[in-house]
Length: 143
Image (tube, rainbow, N blue to C red; front, side, top):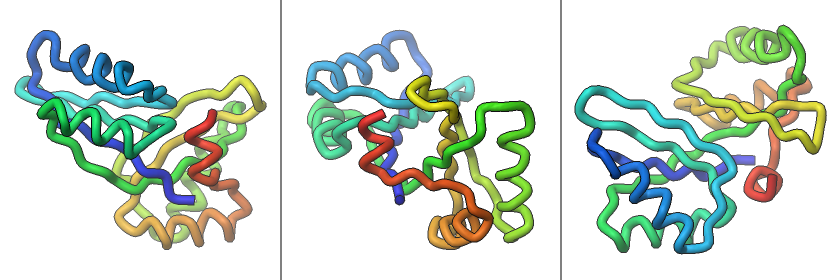
């Protein structure tokens, strides 16, 4: 159920994002979801890809600063209030969301939200207890 996310440290200057995405493409790795957070000096690009090991290898071999983080991908009803219900369940379990980002998969009637928690195992247990679907990594990598 845990999904491996690639995080890439980027200097905030022209061409750095393009460089990372070109390397991922050259390696034949397909991006499933991404998030970019930045400050005036640097950014962190977070990627869910179809072949994590290949993506990490391609980026490290070209000098990019890369780390792996475990996250969860949760199915969210694609309707008003769908995400609020999931956040209520997490709050009731005393879990704090460190960050999140979303994407919609039109193959289903659900959206997918990627969550980062300090305690991923506790989050899995709380979500399951609330009847919320946590997607297996293999499903996320192939969306």
